[in-house]
Image (cartoon, rainbow, N blue to C red):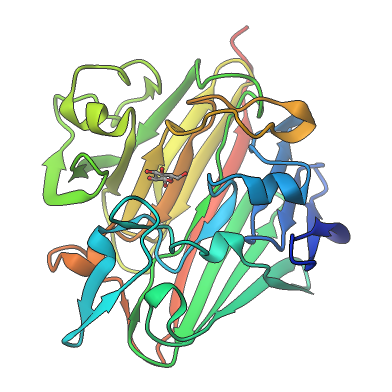
Amino acid sequence: MEIKKQLFGQTKTGEAVFAFTLKNQAGTKAVILTYGAAVQSLEFAGVDVILGYDTMPDYEAQDKYMGAVAGRFANRIGGGRFQLNGTEYTLCCNDGANHLHGGICGFDKKVWTADVEEDTLCMRYTSPNGEEGYPGTLCTEVRYHLDEENQLQIEYQAICDTDTVLNLTNHSYFNLNGHGSGTLQGQEIQIFADFYTENDTACLPTGVIASVADTPMDFRQPHEILERIDTDFVQLRHAGGYDHNWIPNCFVKEQMRKCAEVYARKSGIRLAVFSDQPGIQFYTGNFLDGIVKGKKGASYPRRSGFCLETQGFPNAPNYGHFPSTVLRQGEWFRSRTVFAFTKEHPDT
Ligand code: BGC
């Protein structure tokens, strides 16, 4: 595995942004930017399966969290408020009355520092006390490693000088027929989960843990992503498609398990997602709008990419019955996600 560094561009404020290319012997290549610690591309079997942009102005012009680390808190916190140790904290709201993916200037918009440690790329960002309303100075490290089995391994670590809340994920949009190949047609997903968290009209969990049985949320057997997406089912109507937190079965703290698998018939590419987190957000790019042109002039219209965001449950700080997302002062947060790629014979 080799890692190469080159200048990618600079932010509006003149900060240099670097691109690190991780390449294994099979020729699989991942490009990671110091802007947002974002995965900019992933070329597997000759197909670039991740949506992204070619320039910094494009990254700064979009608001889709393209490939980035979402933090401090991935997904929504209702009303931008939560209580911790008897104190109420108010966060910046950037999604109507709610806080989304870390707020107005979350981790996706920060320039991270980067070091190469042997065959791993280590990115770090220190979030000052009070940033976006969160308590404590938080040091976060995200480590990217591409192995010889074509697995992109992501490790998250964080530590804070006070009690705080934390939920880190990667917000890559995948299209296994290639970025810019149109909608998600012909791609089927399996999610190994009996339950999901039900949403209200603002995509915030209602607190109800719902069974997938007999609903279009049931992916225990593989289904085409688009097959049932426009069904007249209230959860899909609220979100304009899939945009929910599934609860993959067999959660044991700090243990990896397979959460989901996606297969594209045309390319023969299969992606399996492993994680030690209690939840996974399956989001079908319902808010992609093609406004900012993607890499090599590609267009990214609605539902042309899917995200599989391994995570704690959305709005967990406001629900005592959700797995805790509290990070105690001086304790290390550690979590892992693996995106594993294999190729089968395409059907056509
Ligand atoms: C959320 C969507 C949100 C999107 C932002 C996803 O993780 O679940 O509701 O609109 O991120 O691009």
